[in-house]
Image 1: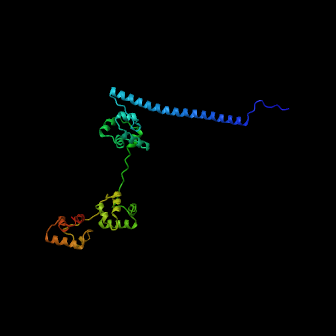
Image 2: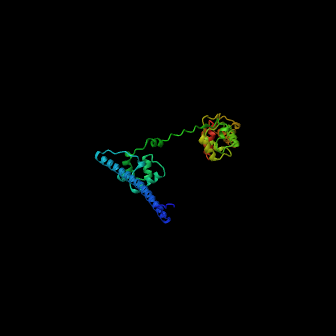
Image 3: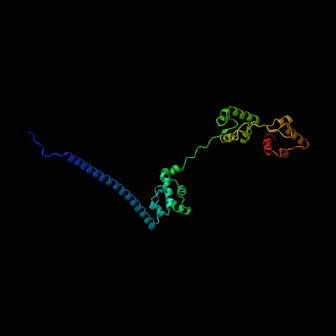
Length: 276
């Protein structure tokens, strides 16, 4: 005859025990996480309290000794801002700026972000201390100045490096340069047929006149009609006008161009490049 076990739990009793175990485990988990969260809150409160105590201590020392402690304005506390005289809105602007991951690199930037007054900035400026890496980054290495090329010696390949100048325009620029015996002024590039003014501006940024033009100047008193009309800016009719004027007046100078071309001062200046 088999012996019956002395202690056997019925199914309802087993269910009750299982529920009790679940409750005990849940309570332990709750107590653990509550203690961790509480420790974090206490730690945060302690940090803020210590920060306020440090600021208060610094303020007390500053009042008694007259020595102002320097601080990094990127990490300014609420209490520190209050002691410095910053308003809530000014401090809020600083915090919003830092939340975006941006850094304040100078006293001027501090004023721009916070919008404090000039008078307050003058008081705070001596107390600002920025880390060395911020100070170094605020002084950008000056970019190397662009080395311009010589427009009077540039070949078509160099000219085509400018956006907007292709094979046809580069050839046209070189031909016009030859026609002028070389560019005397960069704005003569505007005279190249089909060359857009915006493209000329790009050209002027990357080229200048380093080699003087090879112009053989003509004597205004002795130059023949054929010689005068070969000047880039003179038509045959205008060349005749110069000869007619000098026929009536002996030993004329280039000053007569002001009378003959008074309506075209720019043209007068261009013609004078080829006469003496």
